[in-house]
Length: 232
Image (tube, rainbow, N blue to C red; front, side, top):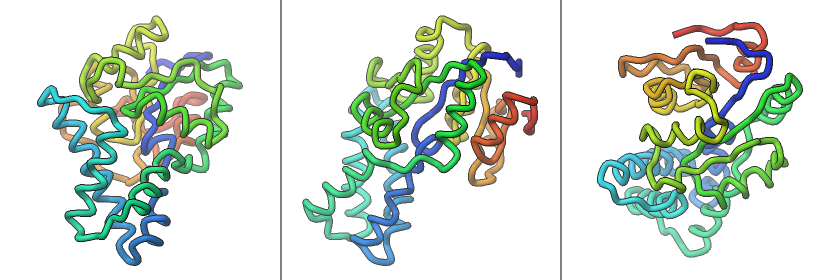
């Protein structure tokens, strides 16, 4: 991994900058003792639908998929998903909590002269809500949604959008994701990848490894500044 003085760093949003499971508290309030299961199943089905719709060439945007995955989850768990509960959970997805270190790391990268981007499955509207709620609007040079090409990560053309936006080759872009499959897809494409391995999971066995990894975004900052972190 090349350590530029002024890096271009493109982030995944869901699970990387923002905690998708920050909906758990609300889910627990609505469905006592079932909140954790609801959040985990909802997220898993959300990703599965993204993969399936891309493979089947049956695109629906991320908001619709998130809604469908919630309804599936309620059915699987036997929950009475009232209109009020449904609406509150969906709105919670527009106000996911950023991970504690996210704002300071983003600003630190800017302070070192770096440019920031987001490359996400989320729609433009969903991402706009997330950034405004977290006070992060204006930090990013480019906020890129897959909705522009109607394919989900890890479809190669998604990663090409980051290169096109910044006018750089893949290796010149540091791509950061907490999702092992996303880091693998980006590495397949040729981006310089940093995997935020929040769950201490093993490296995906897909014939490629992230260029570097760490447990939090703080480790990313150390890596950009000092070249620390495990290398793949």
